[in-house]
Amino acid sequence: MKKFNFKIRKVEDKDREWIRKFIIKEWGAEKVVSRRKIYYPHKLPGFIAFDGKKYLGLITYNIEKENCEITSLNSIVKRKGIGRVLVESVKRVAKNLDCQRLWGITTNDNLDALIFW
Image (cartoon, rainbow, N blue to C red; front, side, top):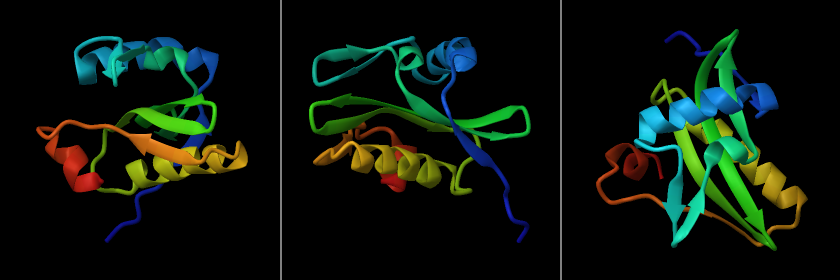
C-alpha cells in the first residue's frame, strides 16, 4: 500500500475565507452550535492538513479556562490518518496550556464521526 503523505500547520489569516466556505459546504452554515453556544470556525484557532497547496482537512477548537473543545473536524480524504493527526495537534496545544479536558460533540447520524471516534 502506498503511503499517504501530508503536512499539518496552524491556521493562518490567509486561510480564513477558505475555512468559512469549507464549513458552509461541509456543515451547511458558517457557524456551528455546541451546547447552546455559537462558534464561527473560520475565526477560531486550528490546524490544516495539506499536500502541497491542496487542503486535505481542518480542525478548529476553542479553549475556555481549562477546557478545550474541538468545534469542527473534517477530512476531505477519509481513512488516511488525517483526522487522527489533526486531533493529536490540538491535543498537544491543550496539554501545553494545561487543559484538564479535551472534548468534542457529534450527532448520532454522523456515521463517519461515529466510526472515527
